[in-house]
Length: 162
Image (cartoon, rainbow, N blue to C red; front, top):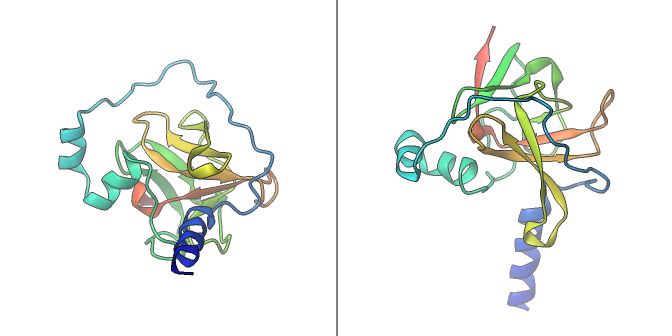
């Protein structure tokens, strides 16, 4: 019984941000060139906190409803914590109820989508185009005009208000 409960908890933790994930396909970025940020693992560890490193470099996730940007709706731009690449505009942010900051689109050319079949799920991972930092995942249960929900970890972001 304990093993069943632990397995159930494990599955819940990894699926909690994957509501309505069914028909999204990853799209290659159409931007022809980007100035990539390349650092050693030691340099990333020196720059980032343990949690930021776990999410951005090791594809971890923060717990739902714990991120500092989940309920922030000020005007501005969300940039990558790893390289300051502008990723999401505040006017595309919405309250999805998922416990993570959610956006219905990104700043063109600055985000890359990659097929992710880890943890026994078929999802689309969202990464920073400039530093390849893991941001979160995208799902097809968002609002108009795109119908998409970019479910993003707060620790992978910094907010620059206007």
